Length: 492
Image 1: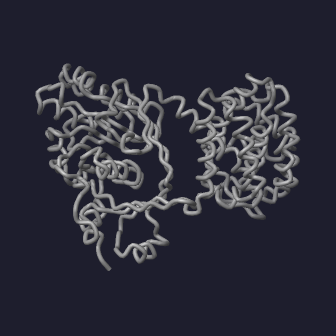
Image 2: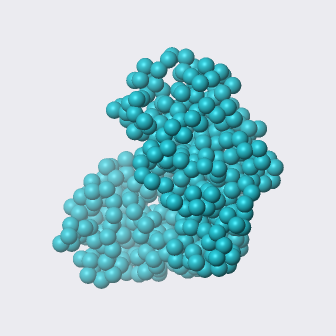
Image 3: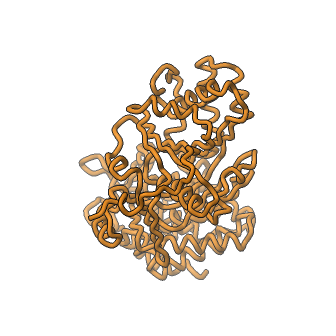
């Protein structure tokens, strides 16, 4: 079978100038950022060459070299399949094995952008990091040294700054990254003018990204090779939906005209409404229906939302309780909510409910509790569907330790000893210990204890008039028959 190189030999880059340095060789950046850059190149809105640097120690997969850094993105949905051979990546380096090649890029006059995805733990200040290391240990350390070398190479030229676009999933990712670099610059006694250069020449953007990337399709790779007529060991699969919101003090849309190329990129000076929309609608919907759906016997998102009762629950939750609390254009909210259901029904994304249920207490606190509080403040009523999701969550978290020390629940709700259809309740140990102490309590006492536990919620939910009575009533219904309980909740 042909190698991917024999199918596409030419790059989407015309002039061969490096414009983007990318920290991270993983699936998300290749299936999201690089896919967009390649499409913008092809449509004539950009001419950007990407160089990828692996920020962690360890060898790169050999397929980058054997495939000349080409790979296929296959973005598949219920009504749309988009396949693209991405060719904008010119080189892939290891920060450790190719340190000199990596640092030479700091002198590249054409360099305009730095993109990163080093996980949420990547943007942290490491006070033990050292400038003389080759490379420094932390990602902020690597970037700080790289930028300082660039500053020196161009003698502080204010036109040689770069636009930095971290996509790590933390709040204010750009600001946090800049803060880490400034702390390191002070610790390393770098020239004072370097900090002024960072402020005046470099743009640190806060970003929000949204696309499910499922990665390499091990179970169907050979089938796809046969379909395409070539072999690709670096396939990246994901969903067609995408959204990249970029917040910056300076307008960077002319330098990075992805929106002009018809790509789902929004430039703004205020990212917060978009983040709030995503957290409360997309993430909030996930967190709200998953415990009940799992207790009904479903294991995956697709099979759960194919149940008419669950689908109606999600629709009513979003339309009647979530969207009314958001101060955004109602048309945009409806469109986004509709896209969420479409994404949940994607037949190519196999999303386990048990994986979504991981750390569900903190997720409900972040994604659902603010909506519940806003709804009560605005309307003076309890949001019945959100309360139902809270009750289902409490049922899901009723369990006991097994002989291996795991905290086990059971979908046979009348028997939580892990004997029938057992599942592990996975959360921080401090959270599990709180629930473990409720073993043996009846539903009323259990609900009262958990709702009043401020360590879980940040507030005493038992102080909200009517919440405990409503939760207890719903818990009794859910333990009897979760699907029948949800039926009684919808259309109220």
